[in-house]
Length: 167
Image (cartoon, rainbow, N blue to C red; front, side):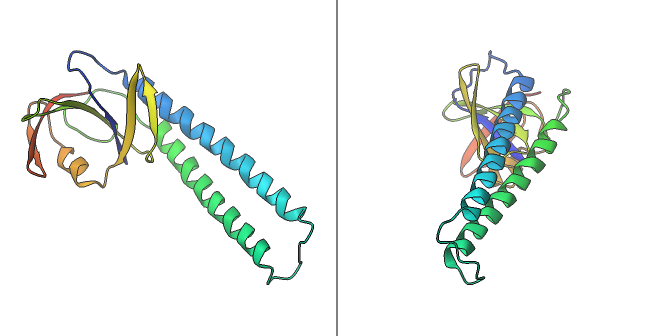
């Protein structure tokens, strides 16, 4: 699970969770297609290699195979992520949890930030002219938000934050 962070978010402005989620779904679908094409091309390259040695000790063939295995693992991870993204329910919530859109304010600096808790990688998308980035749910800051409600304060790294809204 991950959190989506929108910098410079104004409290009066409401981000449409479905747009944010759809943008990340589309990004994952694009990455999956690109990985599939890359795997096919790498398989063709290794099969068509002029100096291909059929020996199991061929270092170039071994490197290609390692590269392809890595891409397949990456493809599987993106496919899993896509399934999780598509399963997110966009219903309202009172406390911060998976699928919540959370608007917070740094009490000292008055900087406002919006987080969307989803399963995602370290990707970024633009929605309504706002840059949205993913951060892992396993991150300490994210853990401090879970199960909190509107108007609650959290303390993280000598900073205090107030939850302004939970959607």
